[in-house]
Length: 166
Image 1 (cartoon, helix red, strand yellow):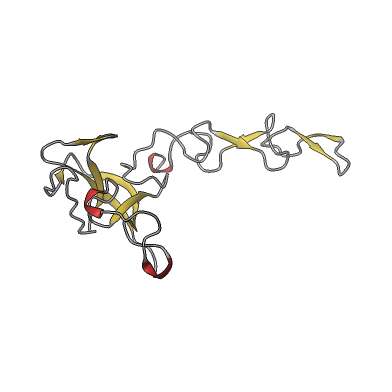
Image 2: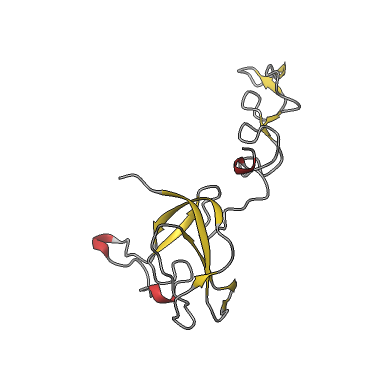
């Protein structure tokens, strides 16, 4: 079975504006999943808040026993109080950063942390190569290597996430 990916989603929030320990109670719900989250504070169904989001998400299980024999490992959990799945037992994972309930908007390339470069694989970021005895054998032979760094292959030194370079 293959995992479905979703390109659009909506932010769902409590209609009464309840907040939790980490801010407003909200959940990212990919379009087409049929998930109906409920507020953990008042139990009301959450409603859409704002414009549709574009990005990439997949849906993963949450609050499902995962131990031996399908039993809970650790203390029992109440899905109706979970601020990750909000009672749906499923939650959205951003395909770019793998964070739960991420809006899918990223300020820079995640592969290189928006630096535009990464360590050169030929010299391990040193700028020099070494022989079998550990002696300096000269500068890195990679023509793209500049002081041990090469342009990020994910963003091509633009520092922007892939979804913006279309």
